[in-house]
Amino acid sequence: MPDGYVHGYDKRESDRLNDQAGTLVDLLHSDTAYPPYSRVLEAGCGVGAQTVTLAHRSPGARIVSIDLSAESAAQARAKVAAAGLANVEFAQADIFDLPFDPGSFDHVFVCFVLEHLPRPLAALVALMAVLGPGGTITVIEGDHGSAYFHPDSAAAQKAIQCQVELQRRAGGNSNIGRSLFPLLREAGFAEVRVSPRMVYVDSSRPALVDGFTRKTFTAMIEGIRGQALKAGLLPREIFDQGITDLKKTAEMDGTFCYTFFKAFGVRT
Amino acid sequence: MPDGYVHGYDKRESDRLNDQAGTLVDLLHSDTAYPPYSRVLEAGCGVGAQTVTLAHRSPGARIVSIDLSAESAAQARAKVAAAGLANVEFAQADIFDLPFDPGSFDHVFVCFVLEHLPRPLAALVALMAVLGPGGTITVIEGDHGSAYFHPDSAAAQKAIQCQVELQRRAGGNSNIGRSLFPLLREAGFAEVRVSPRMVYVDSSRPALVDGFTRKTFTAMIEGIRGQALKAGLLPREIFDQGITDLKKTAEMDGTFCYTFFKAFGVRT
Image (cartoon, rainbow over all chains, first blue to last red):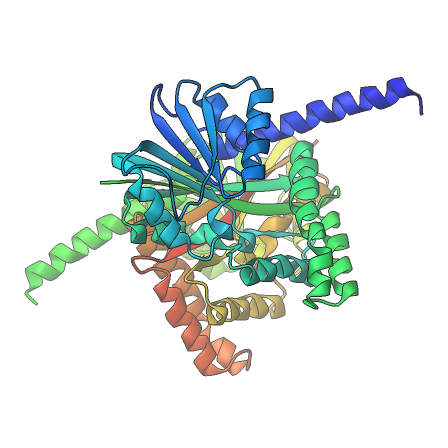
């Protein structure tokens, strides 16, 4: 295959994936923008997957992004710098031992973090302490119990349950999305509002078929194959059948459903 | 309790339920309105639960509503008359043996019907035959596999599965919502589009807590208790625990999720 074709393909592929990213980014982030000079804490930035979007949508805000891993925070810093954004500071820090004075922030933003924590409620309480009165928290999480599809498949559901079980053994909760409302309330936030962000995919939406069903969800389940088999959670042939069946949901007559939850609360 | 209070309460209760009905009606029907003089077939009108909304939203359309049961069709007729609507004719008729010439209608509307049919694809093909070229079909169905909630409960999920199994034994499919896209395509409709209509309920939405979680979904599952126990689908104590747990999802810190699917297609 000549170089030119390969590059051409890569260019198209890259454009398409960027389009796709745009779709999911809009679904999750389009209603989050912080005013100029507001002080925003992104807690658990990881390698910066959401930080670029956050910084881009709130260009005048003063964002501090932290992660427990110094290495992840460094990668996030590089990613934000590469995007030409200058409104984010990075630090290694623990949500349960925050190096900030009480009331240091106007807003807290948490995305795909609580699902990993053994004590999500305590995390919310800790984050509330660095918010000033009237400060807001925004939390986005998925919920693997919201995944269903056509053709339905018991093997695929079992493979997904392996991810849920591994997450549980690691102290997390892959089904946390549905619980955000009581969690924020119990942490003491007021005016708690939760809105579901459902991703519905069929072949009339090819960017989502590829970008979400195949390359996000199915790839994630495929990615825990080694761990799941090693832990003896499922016979190899059932797990592999599950992956085969998940891939069928991305074919012409397949459908796939998944829901993210976005929660909002106010410190009184 | 004095009569006055009871009546006052009933009035408030009635108002609130009407508000609630409005919410679900909007979610499902707000984007369906047929133009004046267009010929609309409502297939499977039952006792007219949707017919009043349909007729109200398309006051100039000429609607024909049919049901396999003459008794149901008569009840629907009475309900529409009581609502002061005069743009609907009713008839007893079988979707698989329609008493209409080919191309008799501009639009077909089907709501909560395919889930009951052993041959939903054949029904769609039969309905297409009475549409003229360019005519449209609109289909609304639920999907019980889309029900999840907090607190989660294995007993509640098992009770729900009793409904799914009873429906299956009766020849239907309670999880049909996710399959509307391939069904309409396979029937030969063009420009098929499906949009999910997710109902998310927490205690900040009290009308939905009462109107949907309690009085629609939980009441429906409670309603099949006798059949489920008689069929031996679940031990009595598990079923009853499931109902108790479903009711907990309607308490202060509960959440409940369910998704309807609305599909649209065109006869070419």
